[in-house]
Image (cartoon, rainbow, N blue to C red; front, side, top):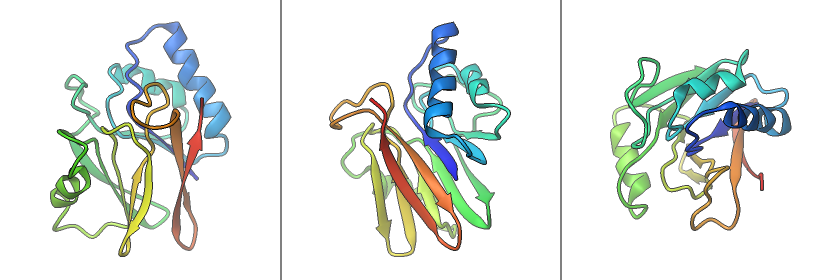
Length: 161
């Protein structure tokens, strides 16, 4: 299982670090890795998930950071997972993001930006947005996600507030 989070928008300080540690304990126990789909604001807070491997990308609210590319592809348990944050209006967001990976074979595309969770198949591709654990905006409640990597890939959205 892989824990997935996005749009945490945390600036820093001990309370933010503690919040992420609790999030990891409560929702990502037993995870093999954590994915953060951007807008973390303070990338140093990703250390709260260690010793797990943490894969992240830079969101539109994130400053440049040497460990945070704009987009990336990771391979976990034989699955190719595209990772990108997103930009612009929520309308047409998935199409814009899919065009970023148009020439790439993926099993799953993980993204953020809209703060609205999505766990939906488009053909053979799982589109997965974990929502936001701190700012649900138009979503009914704060959320995080999990990806299960077995014979197939499967996503799960979890209410966390």
